[in-house]
Amino acid sequence: MLAMNYRGPYRVRTEQRPMPEILHPEDAIVRVTRTCICGSDLHLYHGMVPDTRVGSTFGHEFTGIVEEVGPMVQNLKVGDHVLVPFNIACGKCNFCKQGLYGNCHESNPMATAVGGIFGYSHTAGGFDGGQAEYVRVPYADVGPTVIPPDMDPDDAVLLTDVVPTGYQAAEMGGIKEGDTVVIFGAGPIGIMAARCAWFFGPSRVIVIDHVDYRLEFAKNYAKCEVYNFKSLEDPVLFLKKTTDWYGADVCIDCVGCEAEGNALQTFTGRKALLQAGAGTALQWAINSVKKGGIVSIVGVYGPPFNLIPIGNVVNKGITIRANQASVKRLLPKLIDHVQSGRLNPKGLITHRIPLEEISEAYNIFSSKLDNCIKTVLIPSTKA
Amino acid sequence: MRNEAIDYKAIPGWGMDADPENEPTYPMKNYTGDDHNRINYERSPQQPITVEILQSNERPKPPVVFGTSVPPSGLSGIIRRYAFTHSEDRYRHWLPLILADRINVFEGIIDDVKKGHIPNVFAEKGLKATWKHNPQKIVSQILVASVVALTLFSVLKKKK
Image (tube, rainbow over all chains, first blue to last red; front, top):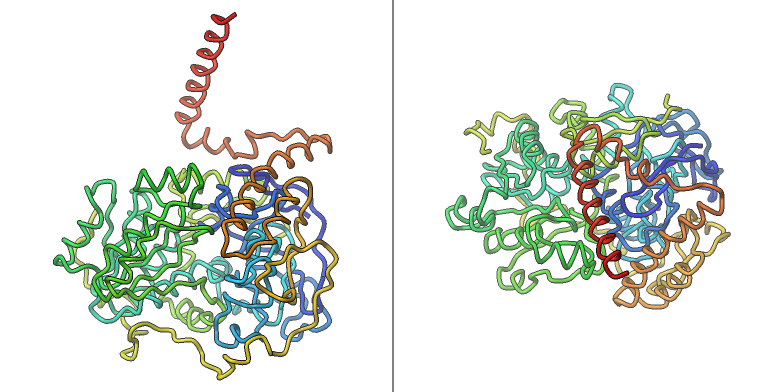
């Protein structure tokens, strides 16, 4: 089968790989119909996440047709068209039972902080991902969800990560009616977080980024205020000023470890790899929120990580909420939002590229070429 | 690039998920009463361990399932094995893994060549897309590389 193959920072290709096999009685093999490149895949692509081994296949956003099921699988049958949440979750451990599907204790030997994630380095379990024609899906009875017959497959594939992560980013912000919400990052997750923030009743949603075409897209898609921080002398000062010198009620970090905007953090974090990434967005979020405000983090930070102004967190009494999205928990609500027309996930898709051209697809997204917001990869064996 | 004033209450879905009990934040976890049962819960059967798995020393036994995509090998594998003797709390865990990743890139090139495959770096970097959408970048990179090469060449020639 054809699959993506990581060869080192900024180098990927597709090539023939062995077909995945059932390795556990609760596994399924899924033939991929659609898969995406996520902004957090770029952290892998840029070599920022430890234990990303050459030869890995990325991809944690995919839909597909069930081709084979293990002997203990009961909820899926061959031929089902499913969307597969990016979390690999057992459904039985105490964390899964509490709804913390992103923190499953039975899917990742290599780290205890995060559960297993498809195609997201050995730090997240060493699973091959969905940027391939076929993929092994563990715990097939727990995560995979049959796509409702009236749902557009392009909407479905975005329900595997982008929509739940954006929604949870807003949800973790504890947004209340009348709040001012500031979102750092106008990538797909930031845009979706801005759109979902409205579900909680704020009066202002502000998105900060440094790429004009992404801000323009965010403004149109999420009906929010947008600002390019390169045109601002000091983004934190500006945000204080625009909130009556009070600070935002809620700040949401949708950027993670590769933030732009601070030369020192860029050098120490992204060039010298002394702190596995630049924490500029998080620093701005902590410093822009009001006293007693809430900072929600869904941006990905690779370990080790330091230089976070934790003293400010204490002094300001900030509540910080952060996690990988628990997709399974959110799916019923989000499927309802999509089916009722309140959310239009496929509106984020700007590029559809054959899986064979994955090198170009990564470069287009990484280099922000051709006004790219979200890319869907289509394997040639699609249904 | 600021928006004009909008009637935000007209946005479909505005406020429909608002929860007045949401203080300071929600969701609260789904409290099951099992918190103190710790790791005593019904586990699925163990996936057979057929490849070398590097396991965090912060857990006593392997999880039920795991990926088998790229087992550790070569010099990078030796470094990774060392890293996993230290807990996730230590730089001795994470920094060796980053070093191993860099070494692994060279191992990948050697492996490709051994299999008779010369890596096409231009294609693997997807530079066809840069050429299509931002040709100035490629041209400027070639110019910079040429100037550096010429400078180096002239310096070395002078030394001789």
